[in-house]
Length: 261
Image (cartoon, rainbow, N blue to C red; front, top):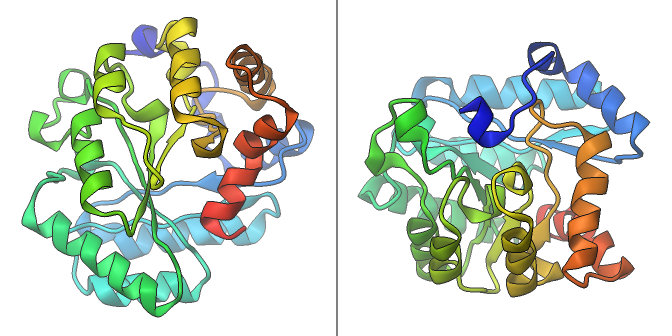
C-alpha cells in the first residue's frame, strides 16, 4: 500500500503531533489547516472534542467534525457542532464500517440537511474514497466510497455539498472517474494524494473537467508535506490552464466559501 500510494512514511508518526502540522503551516505560509476526524459510534463526541481542543491551541489549525449513522443522539451532536461554528463533517465509510446506500446513512444525511437549514447553513460532507481499502485493510467491499456511490449521493442530495477526497476515488481507474463523476454544483474534489496515484495527464484532465471552482487543495498529512505538495499541485494547475485567480481559489478561496472560514 505504501508503494502504491507513494506515501512518505518516514517520520509520519511524529507528524501526527499537531505542533508539527502548525510548524509546517507556518513555514510554508499556510493560513489554515483543516483537521478531519472520524470515529466509531461510541467515540464520535470524544474525537470531535479532541480535535476541537487541538484547534483551540494552535492558531493555524481548525477542525471539522464527524458523525456515525449508528451513534446515539445524532441530532444533539449535529446541533452541538454547529453551535461551535463548525460547518462540515468528515466520513470514512470503510473505516467507520457503514454502507453509504443504507437507510441509516440516508437518515443521517437528511438530519444534517434539516438541522443545517435551521442554522442557515448548507452542509458540507467530506468523504474518504480509498477504493482498495478492502484489499489493504480488509474492509467490507460494501463499505467503500467509490466514484459511482459518491455520485449517487451528489445527485440524491442537492441540498448538501460533497467533497470527494483524493480527486473522488483514490486508486480508481481514470475511466471510472470520468464516467461517474459528472460536474455538479454540489460536487467538489480535493487534491490530496491523488497526484501520486494518477498519471499527470489524468490528473490534469480531471482538473479541466471539474474546473477551478470545484477543486480544493489537500495534503493528506501526515503522509505528504506542504513544502512538496504546494509546488507540485501548482504545477499541475498551470498545466490545466488555471490562472492566478483560479489557483487562489484552489489553495483557499473555495474552502473559505464552503466552510465559512
